[in-house]
Each structure stands twice: as C-alpha cells, then as structure tokens.
Image 1 (cartoon, one colour):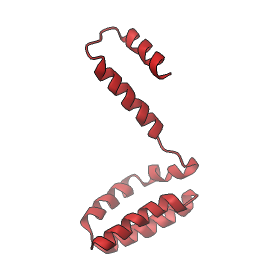
Image 2: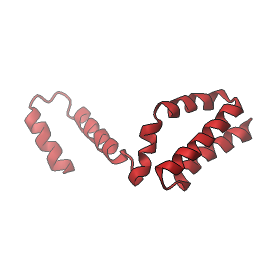
Image 3: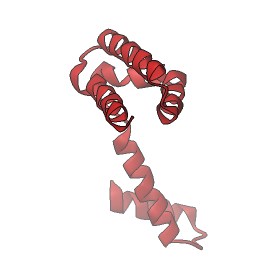
Image 4: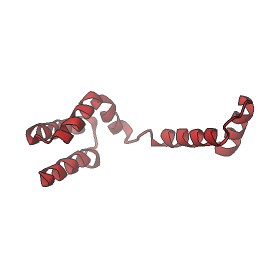
Length: 103
C-alpha cells in the first residue's frame, strides 16, 4: 500500500513537471484520477475530491506556469507587520510604513 501511495504522489507531481499545456495536463490528471479511484487508498480519495472540486483553477497554472505564491508571501508579510504594530490607531501611518518598508 505504501509503494502504491508513493507512486500516486509521484504521478501527481509528474502532471505539473511534465505537462506544458492545459489540454495535456487535463488528460494526465484524468489518468491520475483513474489510478486513485482504482487504488482504494482513502487519503488519496480525499485529495482526489479536492482536486476534482478545483480542477479548473489548478489547470489555470498551465496558462503561464505561475502561481500566486508572490501575493501570498506579501500578504504574510503585511499580516506579520500588522501583528507587530498592534494597537495602532492611525491607519494612514500604518499604510505609510508599509509602503516605505515593502514598496
């Protein structure tokens, strides 16, 4: 069961590493779905449902092979800064400091 789970995880990684177009990724993802369905591993069935519910958003990655990691990183920095400056009442000053630090 562990070797099969490992193969399934590698198979999902291959979709993102090998595929260069949305159509190609859609086909490989469908083949991966079939393997997960045949495996009977419950953890992968949960992942299967998550991927199935968001497959259009996942396939958008193949438009220009970019993620929203930069935006998420910036949001984390802003959240961290906001936590460090807790109790601040002057929103304009907070925004001024953010611009000076991160722009």
